[in-house]
Image (tube, rainbow, N blue to C red; front, side):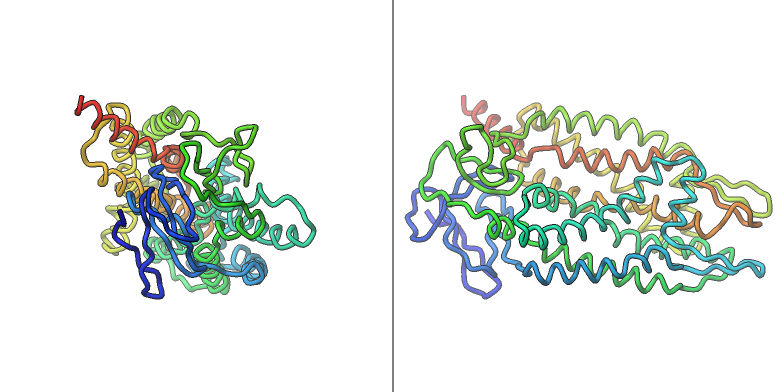
Length: 427
């Protein structure tokens, strides 16, 4: 029985059929998000395909050649020294000129002894983008030299959500509004380079089709017959039968029915994030000295003071720093409890919520980026001084733990719980 067809960019319908239909040139595919086995017709390189049950994308039609990706990587590499080392903003305070750049803010965090917090900012703004560029270069060179490309291809899919240059760019705007109350600000030459680097990284991540890279470097025969032994690999999304060692034939990671210890690891990360969220919201996250007067701000009090000068920016910070983290915690609690008690109601809503928090969770790092940039703008030796509060570490740790909690949850368990609940109700 044919389901409602999905339309490709060309406008022609791309139909997906349940098991039992006989289409020529088709293959059998398991959905990595709901584990449905269905028959997928031959698709053109520019076409997309979606799962007929959960609407997850199972075939990505976007395709940039490796040469174009390498050219983007080289351009990004040339921009990085200017984006990270040149001034993003220039501050003028009582005749004093201060330049602020990305690396300087991270160094100020390290000087204060907050090495772990500085490492979080360093990884998301420097480490992850640099790794992305290095990975693309490795693929280009490794393809020529015949090196093993599997580890890099596996890493690329997981690296996408950790490249947070776009969030830091928003943080520059927030920091500018906070500091302009005390001093005069001008954009620096590094801001133009950073904006260009951000745009290039977004375009690269959008058009980086890891699935087609797998097909190019490690082609595998597609399943032409339905079988209960067919499993989908969560690393490379290949559907096939495990090899003699129980591994994926393409990427060589263990091929299991469900992700190992998924619920336990997700619960552990979620509980740890809940513990860290308490001091993150109760302790001061920033300390500012104005003419020797100390003023401490928690996340909420900082948003309230920011609302006095710009309500729209305060709303953005409130959304990223308070609403998103607590929403992720509540959604994850709901999802994990629904798996535990085999809830059969509201499955589609829970799937939508899981995809939403997966997409939006990274924006919670905005507050840390604002603090890092503000610390490079306002030095302790000036009349106006800014120091990071103890809540910053707890907040950053909570954000990373919630991201990991979502990442470690195998969404197929939600479908298993739904089906188990329905079966129990039928009995």
